[in-house]
Amino acid sequence: MAKIDLRNPPNEFPDIVGAKPESPILASFRPFIPARARLHELTPLPLIIGTLLGMIFGASSLYLVLKVGLTVSASIPVAVISITIFRLLFKFGLRDSTILENNIVQTAGSAGESIAFGLGVTMPAIMILGFDLEITRVMLVAILGGLIGILMMIPLRRALIVQQHGYLKYPEGTACAEVLKAAASAESRDAAHAGDAVARAAADEAVSGGKIIIGGFAIGFIYYSLQQIFKIMKEAPEKIFTKPFQGASISLENNPALLGVGYIIGPRISSLMMAGGVLSYLVLIPAIKFFGSAGTLPLPPETAHSIADMSVEQIQKGYILYIGAGAVAAAGIISLFRSIPLIWHGLKGGLADLRRSGTVRENLPRTDQDLSMKWVLGGIIALLIVMMIAPQLNLRFNFLGAILIVAFGFLFVLVSSRLTGEVGSSSCPTSGMMIAT
Image (cartoon, rainbow, N blue to C red; front, side, top):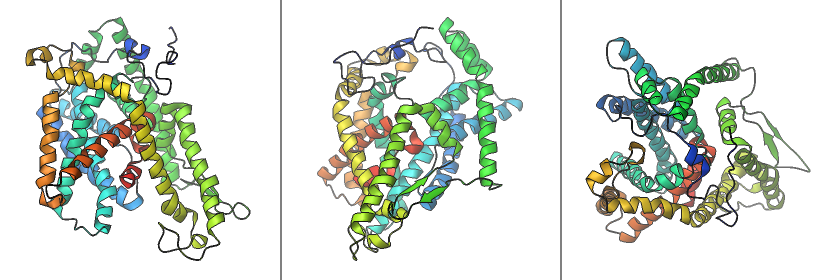
């Protein structure tokens, strides 16, 4: 098999990973289900099951984020549960689901988890600022925020997912796709085998990879059981140094999920994440401890303790978190400007959709059909109006405030999608983006 050169051509957007519009990886990619295949996808039963699973995983995600400040992606668990439910229904005489229907279920389920996580990191801050967390306000924030994020992601799909295929790994998405392909129904496999030789080979490889996925699941289950149930090993062993390196610390989070994500995203992105941890815990925190210990009063933004009395975790939450939030915001703005050629390339496809007739759009391949840009723009305008007139949001016809919401929303949709593609949704710094906003 010929090796594909992943490097950008000379002088062609050298600072953007995969900036070339027509990448060799994209040119060689064949979807598991051919674009011309027509299978059941957006049907009532997957929507109902996805909604129920989204509610369950949303509740668990909200509990975790309020308790420990983090959560994990629900895509893979929802996909596994969806496959199990449909297989049970198939045994009782119902039609087995297609891989596209299972994908609808996992998308709906993981969306519920993501919205709950966003609420968990924003609503407490709103409460601290003095606003009442009445149910209508929480519901409006969740619904409007979720809808505006979805609408803004639609024109970015071509730029960040299609054109950057193979460069942005989307770890959870990749793992979830392998799970779905390994457990694909007979109908889905027949559709996959109906494609060309390359598509058939990809389908056979995906099915045979199911044993590897099951093996990885078993290893992770045993590892996690030894760690959490039998307490044989610590989940996050930590070493805190004293003088002359007071404030420095080293810890290792022995989490099978994080090990799997690191395996998918590769050494480059993993090294960058580790470099951030090294910079924080071996450089910045010791420096803050060393230079700030002479003071006896709290230094803003900390209001309760002096630096001399603060632990490593308190310094991390009181100072390093804000430094990281600023870095996320700066990186997002830089990424926005550097990605303008890519974004424009993707938006052109969406803008061209405005000039297409309904008949032309229906004749496009299944994998190239997006929600019409007329609906996208109309939906964003409608959401702006709702934001301005909703009394629970206190905008009171503040057009500038609504525009800022849309502007920051677009920026962080871009940042979130790129970071999700690089390090996964579980490692996406949602709280840092909220602080920066």
